[in-house]
Amino acid sequence: MNQPNQKQLPPLKEKIDLRVELKFEVFKTGRFSVTNKSKSRNVIQGQPYKTHLVITNLSNKAFKGANLTNIMYRYVGNEVTQTVNHDVQVPAINPKATTEVEVTACTFDLDGGGWLDANVIPESSNQEIQCYQYDLVHDQDEPVSRLNYWGISFFIEGKLATLQTKTNNYILGLTVITVIEAVFGIKNTLLFIATNLAALFGLLSDFFGWLAS
Image (cartoon, rainbow, N blue to C red):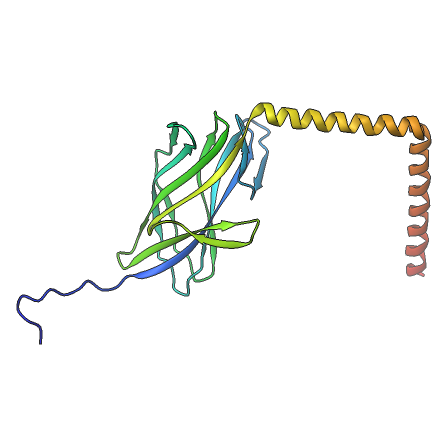
């Protein structure tokens, strides 16, 4: 029997474990838009992107949905931030199932380390969320620092570094061509490749002819 002044403890909440993966989608504005989603958390300074989150319910219980609020991109090492001026709705997810949500379009003006984080507000007052960062390299999940919160680092490669990498690749390609020309001759090399391709296609033709017979 309860005492008149005895306080009742609130019911325990269900803890839902969510793996949240960050993906950047490269896109070009205009008539001929090209998209390319990448699991890499590296982006290039000045390149426009769309940010996606791939969310997996690691629990054996149904996740009833949540809102991502106070979403912010931060540049590590200075006070510059980019704020997303809207919330993002995460739908309900069955146990062990996955969904993907789009956060926003963005362009990063500075290079170096970046950080993206958000508050995770559960739709159900009976649930609380433990988010996990997925380490793609080591194929493991690491819990974030507190409940109902998510954050992850990414890297912004500078324009000059990207240009230098492309230039180095062009120089390497030209060097290889120059060496081939000096040792074998381009004409002889192309003739060798064409002759071997012709022989290969001839063998394939004979093989399929044999199968047909």
